[in-house]
Length: 299
Image 1 (cartoon, helix red, strand yellow):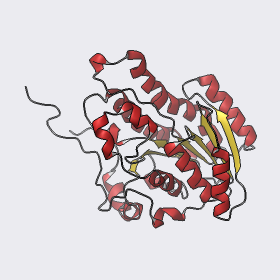
Image 2 (tube, rainbow, N blue to C red):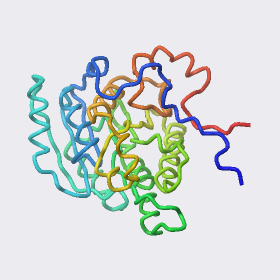
Image 3 (cartoon, one colour):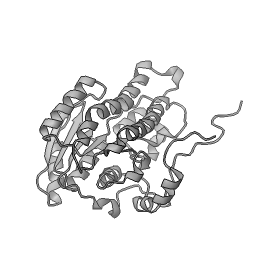
Image 4 (spheres, one colour):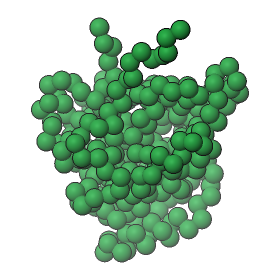
């Protein structure tokens, strides 16, 4: 029997001619003075890197919402990052959040609205979950579905309760970054739960633009790069881990750069942090004309 898929699907890994593995000067120019930021799953790894990058860019307030509550020295790290760049002390809010629980998300929205005095400029949906690498027939059904709960339902609930807050700030960035993955485009054994959940978030991100783009929302699906995180170590096959050698500062600085300016033409699309952002901007006309960087049916 022929192997599947007959044609390897495009994953956009080399969309730009220059591919980055760590941060670079062009994306370290972001400015976020006066901005209020919320990051889910931000106590370590990619989420923490994003928080520190926003602090270095001068964000006025940064909230970290995480299920673990293992905040440790995170607040001090954020304050230090801001101070080292000559900024005023950042308001830091640390709060417990289960993105799969609607009441928890609702309470978090109320708390952030109160702490930030009704102002939220940028939401980064970074919380994620990955099952151990197993075929569907050998997988644990609870673990498989937990991936959907965190990665898809979590983005849905955060959208439901936080988009109104984002849109309530006239003239603000009104930006949502959904941390996605190249796994949304790849087809490989033992990755059905994670890949399916991330594929669904691509489409959900577009639906959010359909519903709220005309009100000012900008939503993006962003692949952080091949970063060796605790999540990856637990969920990916051991033989694949050596390929996860991108620096965690790459997604941190890319997300901060992407959300520093409103680019309506780019919203709703899939973006990889490994791409060269200067080249990406130069290809604006090509991307718009071809409606590129979206998942579509080929007929």
